[in-house]
Length: 314
Image (cartoon, one colour):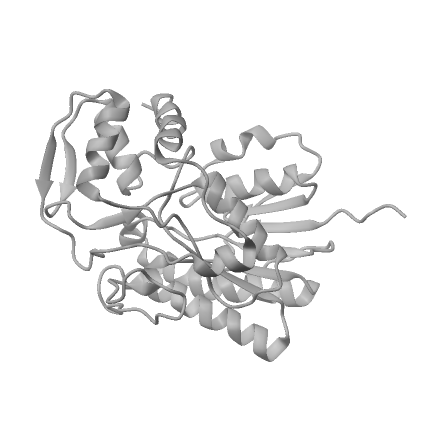
């Protein structure tokens, strides 16, 4: 008997992570229905899939009812603005896609008896008082600060996901994504990697906030997507951190970018934004044990690929 081809729905399919996830699913034999309204995603990220018979695209806001007339095995909910520049500019859309969008995507999974994965975020930990962050840490979030629209949308989305799991028996997975970088990031999305690379490639001053002593850990996109795929295919339904635990200060990272791009840029310092997390480092013991997953791509190799991509965009 011929093995059934799995069918996946990816919300936010034209975004940075959603498009890489779509590529991986297609490579692993899935049919993929991508949904995006291009608020922060771009058609460039999925243009290479035009004419692929296993990929179908629907332009839609997932905060509206999602109607699909075909079987679905997996729903991957990735739709959301995900950088401070985006969610500070689009606070209401960010709250709506985290609440109404998650509700609609879960409703689709329930209706189709599909397994559901929520792309959550390390931001649910806020400005953490625990270091590194384990999945059982509840976080230190300012609900009414400028970042609250994103942090609380994702916290609500996690609560909604678990409610559907408990109340309706939907098979659910929650991934908490830490800083990720790679090709297809937007130049102007305001995050550290695109900002530093675009400034360095143009020999402009590289802008570091505060003294640059705040830490970040950067996971290359292919590693992250592999971890997320393993989580969906596992039997584990509690939140799971996926990210790279190698911690760098933002200042060290700025110097690394200047070196890797061969730039003449100098570093300049600006005041720290409100509620900017001082430390961000995932504890990935759970992913190592349950998924047998750990990041493989070293920073220098990941940066080479990312810088090459950004050179084509400047």
